[in-house]
Length: 389
Ligand code: TTP
Ligand code: MG
Image (tube, rainbow, N blue to C red):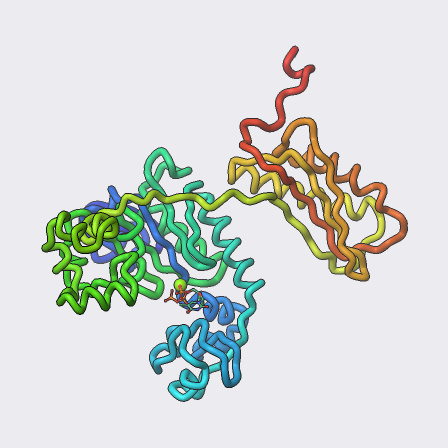
């Protein structure tokens, strides 16, 4: 048996009540913990959590995110509001009947997207194999040889959950298993701020009592047809040989035969790579002079280079973006002979793109990035002089 301290990420043998290093009681013990590598991370009441983070005055109140008014629906209800009944997709008027004291906040998608990206930036430090499912959830492959840090997956996940809490200010629930289906199943078992694992030895028994809809791919219609045939639970499907499942449901039956026994062949598939990587900043006071703008570019180039390094990418085109005081956006770009991931190279080309724009106009924002991405290995070949040296 291994146990994980969820407050200091120590992985220890046995199942102690408290952490031998930090004394925390948030211990998670599981016999297969050290050997499970596929994870699912899901933010808790995501939109509502972001709104509470940004307004501590409502932290202890029931919060519903959604468009107020007659025809609106609930997009997220925080966990306090859920005690009174409101749920996602419920008509707002009904949610407010159940919980009239709720604070209703219209969704701010731009903000949630930004938080989602910040979470992604943390996840990518643990592994490049991240499959985002929506703004607030992703699968991670943390297998040895894939993960960036040679620590057990459970340790990396505890660190990620802590980093998301401390740096971003919201909580997540983590599911750890040996495939995607069970990792997602696990992340839902201990919400909010949860940590759960499903091992090989227990998977079938855990799935057996669940309604058939718990199986990925069984929707309302299939569940209804199964109910007509007297099949209500996953256990009943487990009792059927594969030939019978295929006989009844064709190709889907083959899929069912795997999933009901806790097998899922789908690999974690990283999202399509970004088309460009960039950083930008809005000034407190508009800037018109080259020196001031170039100074801003320097910091931005360092940020872009750091992100390129983390994602293992480089770019063949440098792009500079400027926004004028009267909100006009202009972009200037330059294709390079060799792709780059270096801040100094980006800065040199960035400054060259910037110079012709300095004509007295004031700018409120500057950004720089690289596009036409390629693997890092193809970037910045040593120049002739270095090669000869
Ligand atoms: P979920 O992860 O399903 O829900 P949640 O994060 O609010 O709560 P939890 O995971 O703790 O159960 O969805 C993520 C976000 O997606 C959610 O904050 C709002 C949005 N969403 C909708 O807009 N409509 C919906 O019907 C659902 C379910 C979610
Ligand atoms: Mg969620």
